[in-house]
Image (cartoon, rainbow, N blue to C red; front, side, top):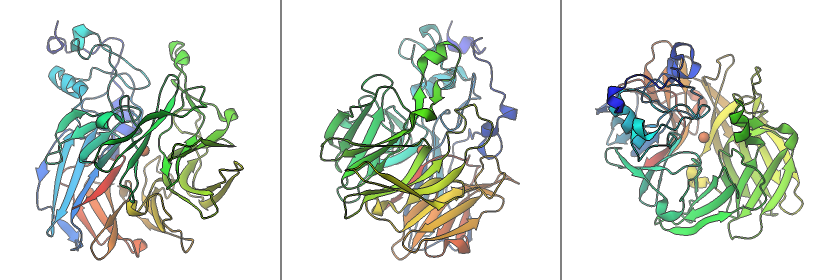
Length: 469
Ligand SMILES: [Fe+2]
């Protein structure tokens, strides 16, 4: 029986209770429309010196999920593009059409389950090509490098997109740098143009790193990082001119527990946290140990003249959603200074507020940065960020902008030809309208210079980039 003749979901996977799921309702509700709209309405003054495209990816299940749905690691990808040129703004959005999305579109319903309830459908359901495969999830980030536009997944191959219309071209190994996969957060060195990445594996050797040249060719094929004895979830990395910086937090993939009906991810704070400083010249990895905490995202890292490494990141007391703990994790913006010779790890708190999605001017990446921004929570919003925090690291100053009814996403640094700006998407929780908001870097607390009305609601999502013309 073909899938089109069998509209019933597999009996093993029940529909997710969407109406009561925080991350499938409100500002997170999936968007199923795909549109191209030009000359969007602008409130305020659009900066005349900006020319380029803001792109953002995020989980957006094509069909109502079955089994389980865990934000932010489940969902299909949807890439949103806001193009600003010649005083006009246009918007385009497209699903990242993996073979799984295509098969589900043919069936008219979800077939695959969630990451925490993995289901690999048989050939009778999806045909021999997709039989036994889990869903690809290129829904985390979107990166342009070496002539490629890539929708990034975690620990899996990215999907290449057509930069003209955002249609999906297919999975891409980037010339062999990602034969198995990549982090969703590779880093591009603005001085060399190289893209540096790591990939974690569920089997030994558990961790590799690789480098792609500015022209898209492979500089270093996946190179093993020795010293891991179990598979760890590692979401992001930082890069200096000398090192790849990885925080190996003790969030362990435990596949034995899955067979016993437990969670695939196990938080083991007693194991502590190991930092790996991987020399980009291929030298021996430097290790240092500290007490456990959890990090999704880094802002940046850089080498100091005395040989130490400074790392700015959003720190959480534990990974919410994976530990079974009811109380919320405590968050803060932190700066660590690491001594590769002694293994000393010295941490200071930059801000004791819950912060996420820290970003800097990507042209400063791997070197010392001045400005950083992150989303914050003014209190009691249950994971919905409603403010932006701005850090002037040179002056040691923190400012903020309260976005009011807008739930805001990751701030992206957008350099103009005269001035620089922060840009992000926000959705009004009262009327569910979405907006692209532009703030001035030199005085972001003064609020938006303008906001552009999105033609459809843009679900709260994850990461993106400003691609200047
Ligand atoms: Fe991320």
